[in-house]
Image (cartoon, rainbow, N blue to C red; front, side, top):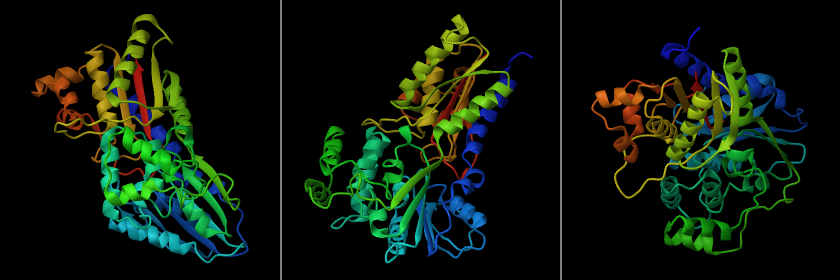
Length: 424
């Protein structure tokens, strides 16, 4: 059967949905639970999947005397009976998140060696669990967070700074829980699946330093408040370093690589040859779109690096750097797709999807969008100039106008972005 627009759209959506399903905590968490302890079980955590992870723990241990609190994003709550759920803001933290973080830290204090602290971590945890370090306010952290989000800094850089402005991140949660046994179950949304980066690593040692945090702000020309500058200027009160938390262990239950493996399996079932380019692609969103367009053209023209019908699969987290001018609406996935579409210039037999597996691309209500060979033509027919829209970082508005946004609602998981470029 020939590949047409309808078939390609359906295939791309099935591929994206396969990635989301592979990271569903309700399907994968139970097999990673540790043995039940002799003492108490305290469940804490944060992230866009925190509530559904807590519900999965309750389901797996129906008769356990669970207690604790997790913090998740507004709209991401699910019913729980024994573990409290606090709702907070993402990507810029709010007062609810600060209050929730204080509750989390309080829950783990005063425990004994026979007790278990189960830490549930997933994407978004760093912003959802803000607890300012001594001498700082939530407003100080919010200002730095906004500046980092607009700077083009990657997630590792952002979390290095966050850890050194926090009373709970960078291993401080695990340190507060000692001597209890701390077991972290995490869904990774960061390139490389580094435990110290996921949620800014509240339960794992932190190899970064105050000096590195200062250097990051300087590199991105961010001038912090006097209080933040004073906090980062010190070299005391450092985060717990490697080797200092022997009572803590860490396990990944879902990762971008696992999600990509599921997309490849789905692609094969659809008659497509998959090529996974990596689970940790970074850089400017629009520029990655140009690169992907070049590879897709090579497949269509030369059958290299593999013959069509094929699909290029990748994950990771790109960035959108906002300049001095006004910016429209859009996230890194729609910006990637518009950059891809402009570079393809209407090339036939090439379609693409890109979306955040949590269902939210940036701050808007779409997970991502779909590109078709006639994306640019339909945009121009709607009175839009695609290149000008791209320069104005208004990609959401373009895909919304032509009806090609993907709206999944909160998926309650997060293994970062999934991109698929189909060449027929």
